[in-house]
Each structure stands twice: as structure tokens, then as C-alpha cells.
Amino acid sequence: MTATSENPKVPRPLRADARRNVELLVAAAEAEFNERGAGASLEDIARRAGVGIGTLYRHFPTRDDLIAKVLDESTRAIVARGRALLDEPEPGAQLARWITELVEYVTTYRGVIAALAAGFVAANGTQLCVNCEAITAAGAALLARAQAAGEIRTDADVREVILTAHSAAWIAEQTRDPGAVDRLLRILFDGLRATAVAPATRPAPPRAMSRRPRAPRTKRS
Amino acid sequence: MTATSENPKVPRPLRADARRNVELLVAAAEAEFNERGAGASLEDIARRAGVGIGTLYRHFPTRDDLIAKVLDESTRAIVARGRALLDEPEPGAQLARWITELVEYVTTYRGVIAALAAGFVAANGTQLCVNCEAITAAGAALLARAQAAGEIRTDADVREVILTAHSAAWIAEQTRDPGAVDRLLRILFDGLRATAVAPATRPAPPRAMSRRPRAPRTKRS
DNA sequence: ACCTGAACACCGTTCAAGT
DNA sequence: ACCTGAACACCGTTCAAGT
Image (tube, rainbow over all chains, first blue to last red; front, top):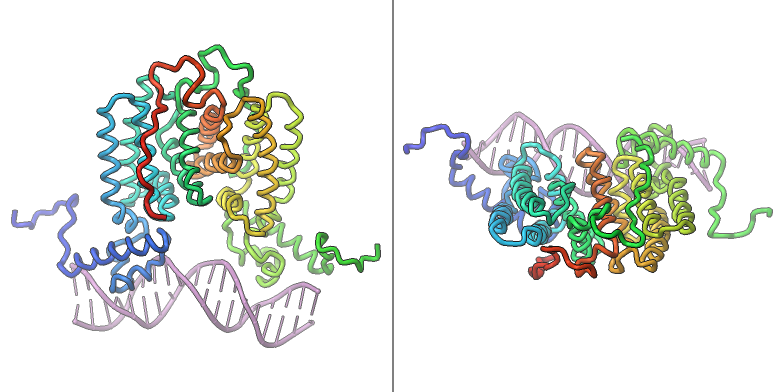
């Protein structure tokens, strides 16, 4: 391969100095995200990397692109983990385990949760979204298997479950109570169990709270 | 009362023009929140009210103060509603009903959810926080009663439950799928039921997902 | 081809001057 | 006592000029 071929999938190799700059930027972003959270000043990151702000924008047009790059390895890891758990017994338990590890993944830097949650719903072409779609796919497989096994209720949607896990992490982050994640995931997992569904197959407990109030009309958007 | 008394609880009456300005500002904010969401430009709100931006700041030092004022009536309503539901039978069902109505309340304007969620965890002296505390108290009473009745699991925390309801609303707002709220609240309510707790009292279904993975060590803050 | 940083745009916030 | 709006501060983003 004498490299004159045009393959849009593989990004054309950068010039040596550009490549070096990207590395410096990622390292600087990693450090800055650690100290200030994912909302850190882009100008500060460029300064820390020792490059002009324009260079940062050239390589990472949006903040999300930068975040995605910094989370690159962890993203591949959580996706691979999802695939691996598909081979283990107890589908429901594996889903729960994976979600728990997903929460870990999303808690790496302060403020990442919000960025990722947005990425999960955005569906713009950003790398962050591409990553979120891969994660969603991994979760979908685990969820479908657990549902097929009759362990998880069938009216659960992957994206909603994933976003709920994000919520739990966000609440823990905001309330600064690490214990919140465990409590909330426990409630989520219990609520997800097929046997938890309100119109239950079992004898019905003395007083169920399943009678849902008539939905008051929705307010404006 | 010839009104020379000093009562810090009752804010000293404003001069007529100031009072008028406050009204104009609240009306303008209401309209602007409707059109642009709770993150609307403060400058725009002042312009719309026909007053200087300084006047807005004089009366509402922070955006939260303005939001709190706009939500004033609804806040009193949801708190009163909580008290009223304490008198009705089926404690668990009333808690669920109240939470559902709380979600309505928080969905009035786009972006209010985020502001309120922040208000619930902040505990600064803002009026928004004062309101959130009142709401929390109302929820706490409903929750405690349902727990005492054995309908709701005892390891549920009011603030966490309320914030989870906010999450459901936020997810629906972000995904633009109004159905999400119902699905997620259903899972939440089912998960909150005392009978849903993992180490169940009932015969144990063929394969429970209760075996929680050992918590991997927490990453940095 | 890539980098630089001044210039621009767009917020929110303050405060000296007015009524 | 209250209002005004110019001035300030602080971002993020672009682009003409350089290497």
C-alpha cells in the first residue's frame, strides 16, 4: 500500500506535529477534566497543551468530540464488557452488573454524566453519539436476553433504562452522597424485575399501589 | 396598623412604580419561559417588561429567584395537594399520585426540571430552595405514611425519590417522548413497593437478579 | 497542511449617574 | 428609593495571516 488510496473510514494520517498536538490536547483535557470537570474551559485546555485555541478547534470542533476522545478507551471497554456478559448465566443479573459498571464508566469525571446523557438522546453525528449508540447496542442485547428469559419486564426500553442509570449517578454526584447510587439502582433493578410488574400474577398483596391516577392533561411543550 | 413596625418576615411594601415593575417582570418572564424555556435571556425578559436590566437584578438577584416567583402559585398548590392526600386511604397509591402530579408541576416550562433538581440539592437560601424544602416535606409525610403502612420499602429516601421523578421528567423532555414518563414512573413505583425488595418474602422466582455485583472501587470525585 | 491569536459575538453582572 | 444602561468580565468561536 503506497497510501494514495482514498478511504474515508480510516482518517488520513496526520502530519507529525499535528499528531503530537492532538496527543498534547488529549492529555491536557484529561488533566483539566479531572480538576475542573467536563465543563472545563477550552481555552485553558489549549493553553495547558501549549497550543493555540484554533488548533484545539481544528482537531475537536465541539467539546463533545474532545470528551469522546478522552473516554475512548473506557468506551471500548464497557462495550466489550457487555458482549462478554452475554456468555454468562443469569441474564438479569448480568444486565444489572453491566448497568452498575456503566455507572462507574460515566462517573470518571465530574460533569461527564450530563454530557453523556445528552449524547444518548442527541443523535447528531458526533463521535460521542456514535459511542453512545455502541453502548446502547450492548445494553440492548443484554436487556433483550433477560427479557426473553422472563426475568425482566417487557415494557422496559434500553435507552430509558440507561438514562435512568445516568440519573442515579447524577443524583449521587449532585447530592454528594455516593450511597445514593446503590439505593437507586437497587430500586431500579427491583422495579425492572418481571415479577415486579403491577398487575401481578401472584396472589396480590393486601394493598397494591398499582391504581394509577388518571393522567392530568399535559401542559405545553 | 400604621405600618412603622419592623417585621423582617413581611417584606416592606414596595413603592408603587417598583411594584408595577415586578409585576411586569414576572409576566415577561412567564411569557419568555414559555417560549424559550427557563434558560431564557434575562436581558430579553427585562426588555420585554420594558425595564432596565438593572431593575431586574434589583428585584431578582439570581435567575432562580425569578423562576421561584413565576412558579409561586403552582408550588403552593402541589404542597397543599400533598397535605390533602394524607387524608385519603391507600397511602402507597396517594404517594404515587402525588409524585405523578409533581412531575406535571415540574414540566410547566422547558428547562425548569434542571433548575428545580438543582434547587432540591442546593440548600442555599434561595427562594427556589425554600420552595423545594416545602415540597420535600410534603413528600416526606406521604412517604413515611406509606412506609408505616408496609406498602413502600423502608430504604427509600424522599429526596432521592423526588429526584428520580425529576429524572423521569427530564428523560421525557430530552427524548421528546411523553410516554417515557409513564413507563419510568411505573418502574419506579413498582420498584418502590415493599414487596419488590430483592430478598423477597415470597417463594423466590426461578431466577432472581438480586445477586448484586461486588462494587468496583469508586473512581475519583 | 497546519498553527496562531487577535477579533468577534454573546451572554451575565455591576455600578455611577440620574430621577 | 428606585431606575437606567453603559461598561465590564468572561466565555466560546472564527478567520486572516503566518510558517
